[in-house]
Image (tube, rainbow, N blue to C red; front, side, top):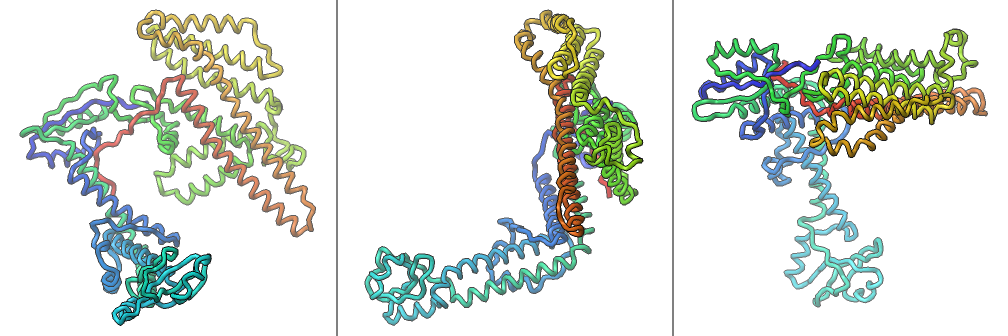
Length: 608
């Protein structure tokens, strides 16, 4: 169910704002409406969160043995230091103890590498000239000897050869020094002098690289010891950010401060009792039906609570007034998962992986819903694979006797039967949505419209089966059922024609769309069949190799592992695409679920 919420307004004196926030946080049940999301304290807290998260990302990169680019902010002292001072200051650095020090070292490493790269790039420009020292060239100029570095296309090199000294030819250009008193010819491109001698630039680049490597090694050496401290800082920073946002939304109006939010109806008495103790003014009321800010606290029935992990992973949540669809979502998603993966062998692999992870994470309660969910999906896949006799795409006659002895449903071996089953599942799935709506709308006239759409759903099921399924004969009364259903749909629309005129005009298209919804479920058959055929083809490819025995064994093992691994991965992807779509689009459109709910996030004490 979706827990009933009450709209809450808390009034306190401005002087007692901080105490009121602490008391509300201790209650741990108030969802604060984020009317204000900015302010000096909020920005400061957000910066602290970003800093700790950046430090953790640096440590993660180090753990994986990679490199990072950590741009210093414009206000950072590291960004303003000249390279020589930056290198000198790095020698006194101690191992980092917190996020700020990790970030400081990461900024220095990035700055040193960028400077070294820029110097190397600059040196590449002067490689054709050999060693270049601007001090010596300027000294020659003071003695009346003009030396100008240039490059010229090879086609024009002969024209300037008399007044120049050439050093090197490279990539269609000739590099040289202009020695004549007259200006550099137009066909020549001036190469400006470097800021320092090239040997000095090279030394600076090497020093910067060595310093960066040393800092990197120092950071890697202490990454594990400093991580717990930074993780604690991150939690504290996130808690401070939440508190700062709450404080910003406890707005002052003269001598009174006001906070708006929501609280579960079952916690109403706790809030009133706390208000009595603290001397707050409290207003509790039922939210308006069109209030878009009411948070959603979803509590499915006990046996179906694991589906919340899937909702969280997909980032979806029904709206506050849209109803809890956890049970049909869970049941049909399990069936769709089994049909899309479609292989008992794959289901057994998934189940073994789930059990292994469950054993490893047996002390982590947060992992249990996901593991339970995957366990159910794996078992449903095994059941479907056993019923259809599908084990890694192996022909039934080639299976071990123990598997051949397991009874199967021969009816599932016919493609027409499978398509009929898919259309039947679609009709049942959509019927659940329509019947649910009809029950909720009773005794309003809208109930009649929903019953009409239920009739349209089954009419379209009969039409589609008559067209696609070879052995199915469409009943003669199908069109009468469709006509009667359309009349039922029109009843509430005609009664409220001033507001529903557009819906009447769109009715023919919506009826055709209902046929498309039924047809959409055939994807369960198509994807499942494709998975079986891919497995069969990999098996045939592996067993058809004509190689010496040793090489054949290795090649067969490689083909089977890669092929079935790829097929299993594609099955998982098809679940994310097709099973999710059938629940969040076809079913949700019929039920009227928009998945626009915002989660209930109570203001509470942070976890340590």
